Image (cartoon, rainbow, N blue to C red; front, side, top):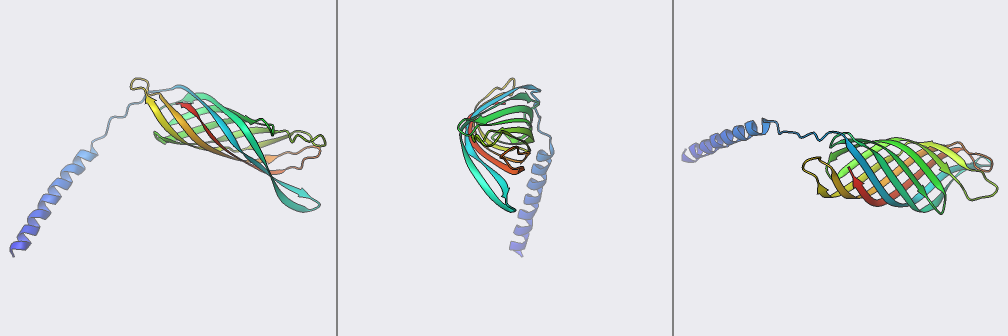
Length: 193
């Protein structure tokens, strides 16, 4: 009987403390909105481009390594979570150029995900083939390691490790078949967001 009373006493104390902490958690935490600001980023990139090709009614997958490359981003960080920016990226040895308008969400300070639409240019470095254009949907994932956060403006400066995957449809051209393309690029760079 004594242990039952002791257990009831502990239960009452637990309920009392749990309800008190629940009331404290219900209080809204103040959110500081730092407002719009300039957003900029640059990354050294490396990756590959794959293209589905059909020859004599037989479909095959061809991939080409595209290294090294560079990506530059500029736009508006709307608040601490959302950004809209233009990204120009390309590679040197296998000439490619991608123009993308992207929307990005940063749910936590160190991680962001973005998606958008792109117009892509590809030069196969083959005299028998012409340049190819494609439309794509780039998806960008980034781990941003902030090394400075401004308390007044909210601007974050950090090192970025990112991966971008772009499914696209190529319109082809003389010597190049039309079809599905997939670009995959990884990068390391600097972000101001």
